[in-house]
Amino acid sequence: MILAIKIAFIVLVVLAALQDMRELRISNWISAALIILFPLWIMATRFETDIWQNLVLCAVTFAIGTGLFALRWLGGGDVKLLAAIALWFDFGAAPILLLCIAMGGGILVLLLVPLRRLVSKAAYERTKWKFFQPGGPIPYGLAIAVGAILCSTYPGFNPHISVRVTDLTKLPMPGRK
Image 1 (cartoon, rainbow, N blue to C red):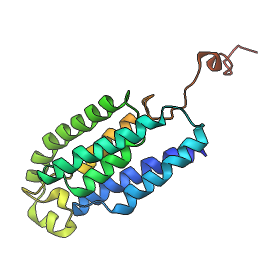
Image 2 (cartoon, rainbow, N blue to C red; image 1 turned 60 degrees about the horizontal axis):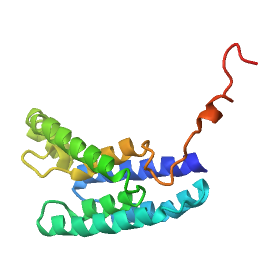
Image 3 (cartoon, rainbow, N blue to C red; image 1 turned 180 degrees about the vertical axis):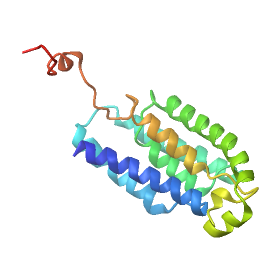
């Protein structure tokens, strides 16, 4: 069940990125599904006492994101997706998550500007994906998704399933009986 939930997390995040690339919007149901999936993750991995950090991080991320939305630096879907993803991380992983998202955004900009110049206007007209729109806005949901997927392997993905060193000694090894 744990693997299924983690796969569902990744699939939802990828769907958000694809929709943002295509339409420059992220449906509310994706963010809602990520929030609904979190309690299942907690039950599957056993509850930890520091889950309050996840809730605080989600609320703070939403509050700051709302300010960025008011400044027109982020879209509303980006803010909701980022807050829903932040729910899955604790304070220890928050800086890593933000760093991965920021790096993903920087790489996205560096790749998108020349890519948009290479894609012909006719190709954009055929696909209608906003991602390829010459001079169009940047779908930051893609950077959020990349950062979230990279960070989902980090121990602050909370509650995190840790592997103890003693568990590694029980793995079957060639030559070991």
